[in-house]
Amino acid sequence: MATDNLVQQWVEKLQIGIHGTRYNNIFKTAEEIVDSFEKLELHDIKKPKVGIVGEILVKYHPGANNNLVTLIEREGGEAVVPNIMDFILYCLTSDEYRKRFSNVPFLPAAVSKLGVWYIERQRDKVRKVLAKSNRFRTYGNIYHLAEKAKKFVSVCNQTGEGWLLTGEMVELLEEETPNIICVQPFGCLPNHITGKGVMKELRKCYAGANITALDFDPGSTEVNQLNRIKLLLAAAGKG
Image 1 (cartoon, rainbow, N blue to C red):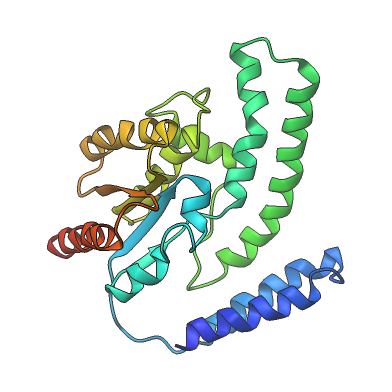
Image 2 (cartoon, helix red, strand yellow; image 1 turned 180 degrees about the vertical axis):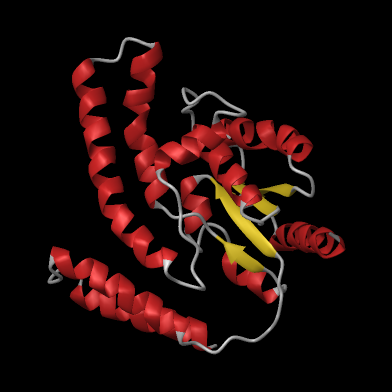
């Protein structure tokens, strides 16, 4: 597949150059990446978008989620995975938000806020590159994501993936990705609460929301996970 080949080419280039890349060249590289994908030939095939949210390891690591992205694509869907930097920023904002409601010292909260400001300032440059693209979607900053989550949970909800999990689901639903798989390790109580706990309310507020929870455990069979995914995509097709 041309897209997969191009992804692999860029991964190899970035692995070779990441240690020697100058800071100012990073955003030029981002432009080159976007431009190379813009030139790919597209087929006029509409696939249901499937967002993946949940516990950080299972969400991103193919070894932990049985190659979930590949499985979704094989079954006829288009996987949409929120960017990993949001999780880092979510962790950085924890002291800032807790400072408003509890006895968190001023210095840690101030340092966290400064760190978020600096990272978001750099991400603004990447957003500008993505905004010019016809094929890539851009993304808001972490505070916009927090505002989306506030409609359903408190930003002091920081157990597991906390309010970030809710914020990502809301963002996907508002960006025409009504099909969502919420993944977590079996027995991960915090994410069962922060994930499954908001699903009913999200379905109530967003017409067409098609959300399912998927547990990953060494003792669970891949057949069961595959069947859950097929049911989700079947419901997406009816929608």
